Length: 453
Ligand code: HEM
Image (cartoon, rainbow, N blue to C red; front, top):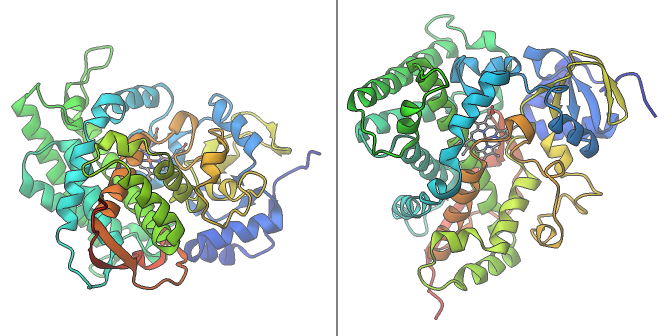
């Protein structure tokens, strides 16, 4: 039956915003209990009231009708201070489609698979710094790995000292938005302005300037080099031409480079941290996974590892139970329409809610339990399982994230015997726009694994 407007929580605006900042998963779960799977929410403060949406049939309609539900880049303005106005995430319509066509090829097919060995080598190199019996936070290691992988993919190997500086500045820039309190700088952009020496905005603006200087220096140097045999993403973007024969401007290049770096490094490290937590929290999962990885022998090739069915199911279940991003990017209602049994007026902003969709009992029985087998027993449609979104803005880096997460997991599990430093269940907590395992997952290296005969 059609109702007039999606319901909204009876809690005050302030209470909802605070809960969203401090406990986003708790906020959406309790609000969905109160209001159902389509509800109106005031928490994305820069956009006013928006609709959180997790009805699978309705999501299919939304994702497959980009004319009626455009993924308007204008709605992502809150990301502009970090990514820039020419980032693919902020573009619209034809301009957006053309840019995606340009960015997608390096993340597919042979070009992507060529990264496999590089990912394994970087993982081995970074983890060789671990010390036996000393507790450490595995998210920090994973961040180092994902940062090095995306830097090598985007820039190739060139000016190492510039990359080190960039990596440090970028980590600091993103850490400045990591805790719930700091994340309010994203939702209340006026807080991120420069109000003088002590204001957080001043530091962020300064960091951003330094990052931009390094990126522009790299772009300038590469333009001067004109090396056509390089295959890294920056080289491909530098040689790309539109139908009028025009190349990308420095500003366009800068904005897309930073978009890829930020999208890749934070999300993939967070997804991996969750995977390490679940695998070590549930011994039966770890045992099954090790048996499968070991079945490939001493030196498995990256593509065989990538194809392992149980490893694939563990990766899928990791991104189901806590999908890194609880929401996709927003969609706009172009003309008034009924969807999922609700009437939505033209101009309504919809946020497809990944977390609530992935928690639906009828799709995922016992949704709070980590059960990779569910992905071996049935297939889910692209509108029932959406860790990378869907449709017009489906994540450009999803194939790289899949390859990287599986290879980092397999490489570390095969070589090392790790344990959780504390086996209490971890809670999901906000890290900028993402949801990470609280504390970043403390682990202890017990030693090398004895290779099976
Ligand atoms: C586990 C890792 C990752 C997760 C969970 C993730 C998730 C997402 C989600 C949910 C979206 C929005 C999709 C939508 O609104 O329909 C998205 C968009 C995007 N992601 Fe990812 N992502 C990951 C890794 C990456 C990587 C490795 C890259 C780059 C190499 C990347 C680059 C992007 C870009 C550029 C967009 C915007 C696409 C557009 O505006 O058309 N992401 N991602």
